[in-house]
Length: 130
Image 1 (tube, rainbow, N blue to C red):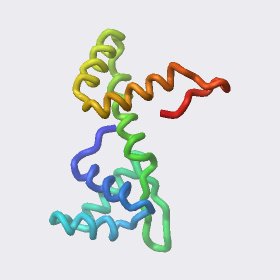
Image 2 (tube, rainbow, N blue to C red):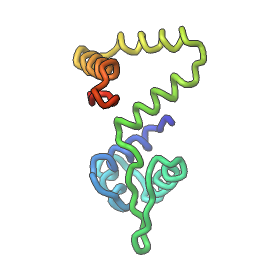
Image 3 (cartoon, one colour):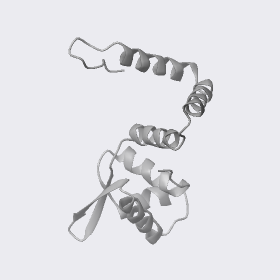
Image 4 (cartoon, rainbow, N blue to C red):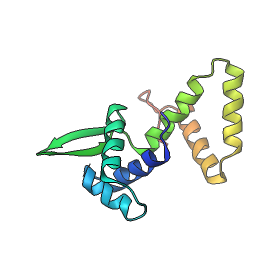
């Protein structure tokens, strides 16, 4: 699920915090860099909770919010979702080739390691971690 600019900014705050944050805490962080209303932050966090992108936990009269998935998992899910919308195998493969053509040498090396790990399972039948 693609996120808008403000949603991404809110998620960056949550991922960076390492702990659940209240609307007030997220608002204070965002307000240091942009003019934004408290109610706007509250609405964005509520929408992210309804999209199941963040976990909403009640603490007294307030809610605390935390990401459901890591930044890396969310990006991977977006990529897989985009590929999942394409039925033709040759188009999916062409999209992957185009994607790989746009990565840095370090990113290509990380992809190579991950693919090698998938093609060389360990003795227990599991793949080695990338």
